[in-house]
Length: 350
Ligand code: DNO
Image (cartoon, rainbow, N blue to C red; front, side, top):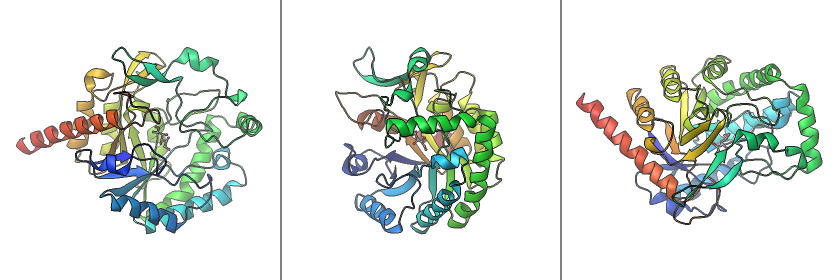
């Protein structure tokens, strides 16, 4: 596996110098953050990011994300233009040597939490999701804001968008996803860019909006939309593993076997209710996911692709982008690398 670290570009308080000093770190996963959703990413901008990364001794290994315009998810006639733009961005990324693109198909809101700095007994803090609190959150007030969300909408625009989604149920969203996939995967294959769909986080409907990439059956349905290794998945332990009915390790093995795992996000979560969880340190003992079994699965299938430590807690007084501080993620990467070394040695001895 190739260990990489998420970097939010020049405004990220975590620097490329910091990332380079994490033991075993090979590259970064990043994006172009100042181009409006739906516009083409120019080759020069991609090249510039790649060269900045290279100067710091790291590869630009994965793009996370090329966001999908809402008109595509809504299936509006204007989607054609945005799909063409997406195709062109993929061609440009391929031409600059990018091999993996992570994206998601969640309506309006990306990952969602109810508290971004929940105090833990050891003095650290973490992101949590509590179902009862989420049920009382109302995005229509225009006052909610979470990292990862597109915050460029005015309150009126957001409400108009939410209204439009009233005509889109789960089946309609599947239809719109299928339409998109059929148009982009051939282009991704030609450009040699492996697509890695991220599961919905959390993996159930929020704010009355449909969410469809949530469990083994939906991932299976998704890969069957287009039978190609370029139509793959980001297997995210923290997203899929946040409901008890998902056996993440079993799912990971299943999709590794099908050669559809193009990227891995490794994070632990502690389940505290049917639809409530707290993000935890990466160690198996800290949460509900057996991280040894996750890495063992990757080792058993000889996974060569990229993996990143996902959200960390804020520790040692660090402040910054929720989930994306330096210290806890660096500890996570080191722990995951340790598990990997051990499983590799067992493999070679066995
Ligand atoms: C959260 C991330 C997600 C992810 C997107 C992929 O921290 O895992 O925001 O980047 O859903 O498109």
